[in-house]
Amino acid sequence: SIRERLTELQELLEQLPRLAAEASGDAAASAGAVSLEAAVEVARAIVTAAASSGDLFVLSVSGAAQSRKLPSAHAAPQPPDGKELAAQLERCTRPESEALKRIARGCADANLAVRLVAAPGSGFVDVASLAQLPKISGGRVV
Picture (tube, one colour):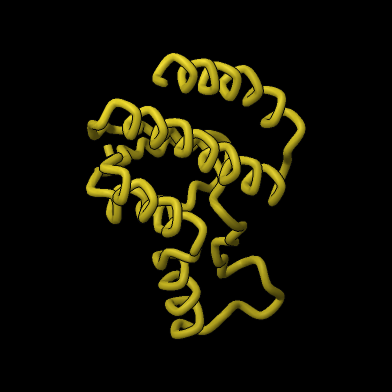
């Protein structure tokens, strides 16, 4: 029932601050993906129980499904040539997360559109990968 799903959602929301505090670096990105997957499952259950469709708002302030390093012409002892730097930058524009694509397909199957809000905090937000959520589910980047 919807009441049971709302209880599950409340429990998830209560656990998120602890999960975020315990995670850092790649673990934080993984914890974010796991938290997202859990939230999607609860939202899918609510939408299915209501025999309806819905929107899921995702706010991302840092991280991605996996860590990516932005290229820097000054980071290496020998700066990369123009072609190599262009290839590194192009790689940062491609989605690299199969997990996010799988989550997005699950949302689409449940008539759950993802609305993504990317608000970079102190770190890199992999919008190229995260944007797969709204693209596949019929949502949008807000």
